[in-house]
Length: 132
Image (cartoon, rainbow, N blue to C red; front, side, top):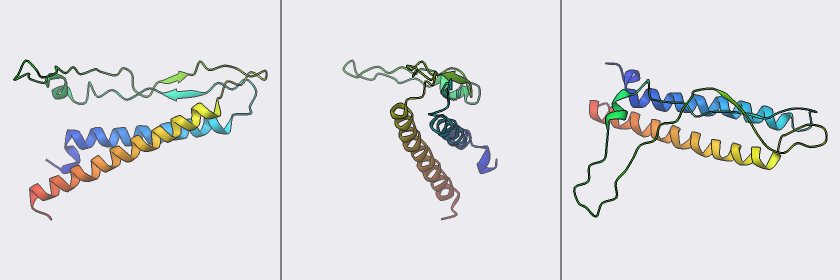
């Protein structure tokens, strides 16, 4: 199996591509902050339900009654546009620069986290194969 075929690497690559596309959408929202009747859009989180069915079967096991139980939640929809419900200005524009900049900052941090995980995962695979 090639390294690129590992499910975790595929998921991380998809997540990084989603963050890149979301950055483009958020930048478009900011660029149109003064455009009359412009509605900001955003992307919904990618769903990994179809790409990783094994992850659905993983559950935390409680070995002690004092342990806190865990539950997984699945996000819905992939690459679907959502229209923001923020307030409109008299020109009809609904872009809030503060909200968009917060989204950009969060998106940047999430992309960096996914890129770091991807890099570390590749390093672990290389170590396991003996290429380091």
